[in-house]
Amino acid sequence: MSSFIIYTRDAASDTFKNLHAVVSSEQDARNTATGLDALVFKNGQRWKYFDNHGASFSITEE
Image (cartoon, rainbow, N blue to C red):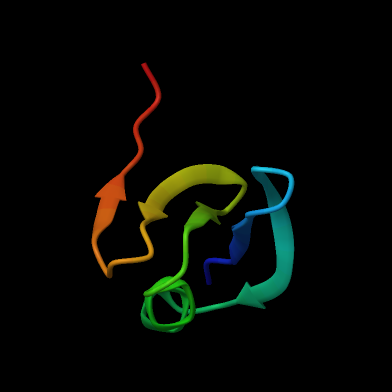
């Protein structure tokens, strides 16, 4: 089972803060992050960035 942690951008400080949302399914993570300016980590690794317009982008490590 995977775990997803969601960080949202705080407009006032322009930093990402933990939303304190830990979900166990990919669909729940997508549903929670869609429409937010959010970074999502899957099993402790960067996974996706969601913009506040509903788009998502994969994040890969180089």
